[in-house]
Image 1 (cartoon, rainbow, N blue to C red):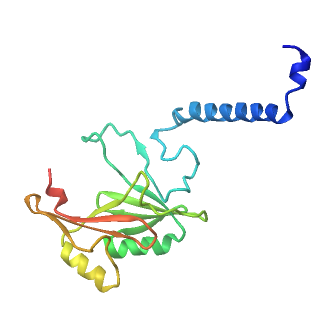
Image 2 (cartoon, rainbow, N blue to C red):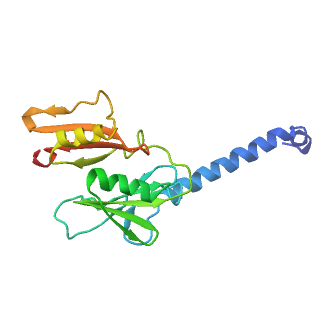
Image 3 (tube, helix red, strand yellow):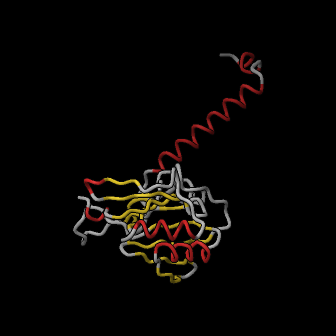
Length: 193
């Protein structure tokens, strides 16, 4: 190819080639970085696209613990919230979370797990429709829970009735908290094997 043929190519063609090359390089860089192990004990990071995962309101941290008998156990969920005091008070009222502080985080201890309410100024999307679809809570009296929640002005998702699986002695109802997190409330799930 001679220099005259190269100089006759319009400038926009060269800019397009440069931009496509830069885009391919960026995608390649992201793909190679995505699979890199993290430093420390972490096995998985909830969001590899943003350090604080501000796009989703909840994060899951998975760490290895060879001392537990089960293959997988959860120790908690991190919820990015605008006002940790309001959100933690709601979870304390409805699910008995014992609230404490750890540095800048507000912790809600619930039997078997904890919720870390982490304040952020960034916009927060509702949980529904993302990889972590809902939180589940087991209660001892689902009818009493439903009655108290409705009497306080709370509403349930769908038709608002308790779904029952008689063979398993299981009852379930779903609601959405005031900040958009989907919650499944159950009674009898612990006995289902």
